[in-house]
Length: 417
Image 1 (tube, rainbow, N blue to C red):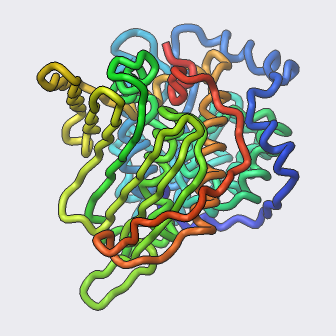
Image 2 (image 1 turned 180 degrees about the vertical axis):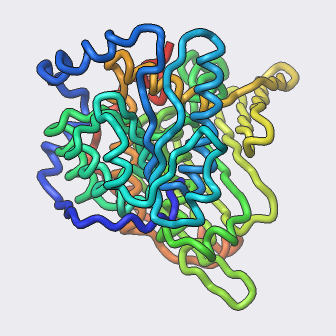
């Protein structure tokens, strides 16, 4: 969900010892000196807005999702007498048109450079939302950490390469960063119901997962360059969901195809298929068509004794999810319920930041997702559109394991109630 925001930075990243990096993905010991230094500040402001958001990148995710959700969250928590954050948000984007189109009056103070933004914030009370393209995220996070910002919410995917991921893991450890990676699918009420079906084996053991994320994405693909292929657009969300529901996985196959619009051809941006195999025996298929005529966000979990089909809300126009459960001996049960996943996700993250408990579990899942995505980027085949994709898959590709939390833990709700 990153955007083509040309944030220009000069810091560099490097690869590193992947074994040490993987160990660092587990929950690290708290830096007591830092915690003791920070916690009195938090306690000194009881009953009032403690945390101040900074949004780096005011494109589709920064402006269209984060800013709107932060404003909604500020109103919602203020109405209950327990505000979590204070407006206006400080926003940073070098593009004048992005700054001009972002935020309602009183909700945003927009500046053109990261230096200007850093001059306006107090790092001890700031939550930085990093909404830049993946290739820029490490440098932005390093700049923020160098300024003393410790609480960060980072868009998915976490890193553009294995080397950058290793460097980010080391930076997180060295600077004692609380990093929450955007993963509101795994923290949604809908996924919570799927997780319970898997855990309780209500329909028997889980056998397969199919995730479909389709939408027409012609305009954004033609006008921005933040994503090198379709693997970086929707697949990170469905990949995290699959790992959350079925545990660690190996890559069996990854395929991309071109996006075609009149006389334009955009390599690798037409869509992607990813096939996974889990040690539990579960098979997963992730499908994303970015040239589709209609939108779809659905997950089908096939169990030994039935199926569960989950439909996520398609846009901010309606926040209702649907779950259809087919058992072996009964009619389908159709459940419809509200599921404002991103608002709930950010509320949980801010509560976790205020309590000093955010990030660790979510970060482990994000690391596992990013590593598997890096392998898919390296090994993906370029193919025609899906109706011509061959069904044969190569042998699974082993991926260095990242410690994952126990099954049944709602990973995305850092500090949730």
